Length: 388
Image (cartoon, rainbow, N blue to C red; front, side, top):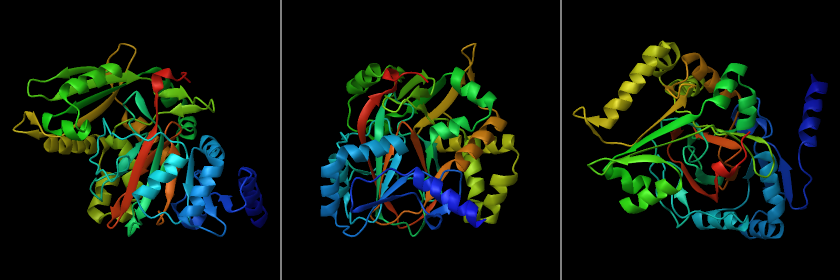
């Protein structure tokens, strides 16, 4: 057993890059930093100070070796700056600018409510603390999306609140041949509805005319309703080739409560006995019917007027008809997401930088206090990328 452990450690060390800087240490996550074990052992690459950990030193490191840090991001898909003294949104933004990330000032198309902290930094999510945010690539239904996404832990969670990350190429390759065939050959159709009173959240301060131009530019099919609400849709096969590494990228964008159910099952000990029964033992058809009913109740008043934004995804089969995942396929995908996820505890001052083309992210349930900020940039159009 000892020999096996030493061999495993040597393999991990062999996969680490050679540091060009004496005052940083490179490693992968240790077992005591993870809240759940998985098959993922090399995500993210952890970069921490050897001695001096001040923000001034971090700025100097990034200023001196920006290209080297970005090469590691390409190679590993995510890097975690841990142990440096980063205190606020302004310093977080400065780190990203020193990495030559062209940050976006606007968050158009977002599904979650966010609070703007600086002109280019937002809160990561205002979702209810008990809710799991399913794994996804940021702006996964939008052709023009960030290639880089970053998070900053300004206030360490009191309990839970992890941000799992997944190498989507490993995830895709772990799926059954039949599910891989379906994902590879049937385009996904994204159908979004935004009521008039939420346009300012989804599109910030854009006018209807500006929203129309934005949707036309990105190739959406769309229709304005008489009350000022809007429906818009687009389709694509979610597999493409990374522009720099040539690796497979799988856009994780399937919205299905049976996929998310597998995540609730795996952290069931965090919920009440009744909730655990609900997630674990309810038949799949009944579970999905109840979840869809809860969604309908939350989005419809008097059976007609939708009150919240909705997003649905479908597969387009060979007859160009809308289909969804089977219960077995949803279960398989949810289990594979969990098995391939790196789930670690946030620490004060952490900065996690993600290649949004290679790596998906999620959010587990949390206990207040928790304050995670986010920023993104280096926008790209997936229609310009080579198909995988």
